[in-house]
Amino acid sequence: MSNIKQAIVDPSQVDSELIKALEQAGIDYVVQDEVAIKKNYRAGKKQLVVVDKKGDALDTCATISDHYICCNVKVLKSISNCPYDCSYCFLQNYLNDGNTKVVGNDTALIEEVKEACFKQPDRIFRIGTWELGDSLALEHETGQAQRLITAFRDIPNAVLELKTKSDSVNPILNCDHQHKTVVSWSLNANTIVETQEHKTARLQERLIALKKVTEAGYLVGLHVDPMIYFEGWEADYESLIRQAIQATRPDQIAWISLGSLRFNPEMKKKIETNFPASTITYTEMIRGNDGKMRYPKPLRMRMYGHVINVLADALGCDDLSPQTGFDKPLFYFCMERWDVWHDLLGASPTSIQDLDYLFAQSLQSRFFPSLPIPNKADYAV
Ligand code: SF4
Image (tube, rainbow, N blue to C red; front, side):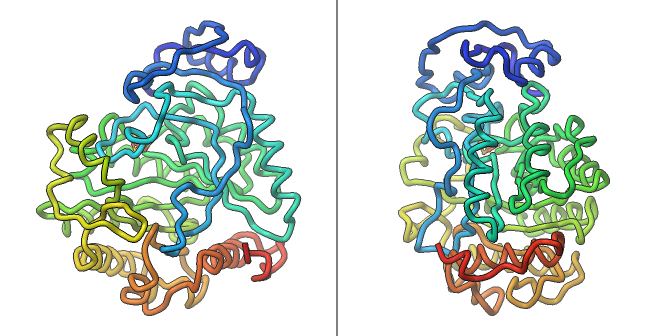
């Protein structure tokens, strides 16, 4: 359970399914028209605000950049802010309103998803709810993921991604998901979980949850991101990878991503102010093509190279490149350049669209053979 103690509900949402979940979870709520903006992102973490859907909720992941090979995942903005408190969290520098908001009107969210997917029936969409929060951290209070899982089951060309640092999986274990939902974890070396990922589920708790959803037949995803440098990182990341692969089954892993610590330059001061005990800003960083600070390439290459070797060994495959076949989880980097892909995997997708197409090919051939074989032209934009 999260540390949410109370909720404020917009009058338009009093009949929503979400309210039933709140009541079942024993969360007290008041119905209120206006909710004051919370200037501090931490001030809103203990209270839920149930809001109506306003404007478009479906978008492309905000970090997409032509400087990198991005994956072109779509995001459904169903939540904003998060009960957890990671030192590197970009929300501390991003949210104008620190209230933890959740859209009560998930029927409207689903209608928007359906409209977009039905307009391009030959394209496979990957849609995540994690852009401005955690997909499952509030599941006991909101039940939102359960309703989305049921809705995505009936959208032939869309896959839902629920990305989390929680272990809140019990409510979704009995959903009729039909393999249309990928439950994924943001995972890190135990040292980083213990020192930087405050209030999240501990690593062992996440791994137990990963095992549970695997046994419930879900597709899963593993995101080792952001990799953070510290003394002894090699052994800690190796142990993480081996435990994660052991907790699941390679034939149910839809995708695995790697990324390293990165943030806008102005975040450094925020991290140092909000997390005075954290040392993550001490390692040398340089400004990347997108303006974000990241480790210099040689260090990133060393860290990625090590994890790739361990992953290949743990999965029992020689070559992780998505371009050499779809008989393995789709491996990709988050926000890295062509040269990093080339140097570590020997090949690179040619563009963001090309990587999106590789995802579609992998999903269709591994899990959804009844869908039409993807056509590259459908992924041109
Ligand atoms: S789990 Fe994600 S959204 Fe939540 S505090 Fe950590 S980094 Fe931020």
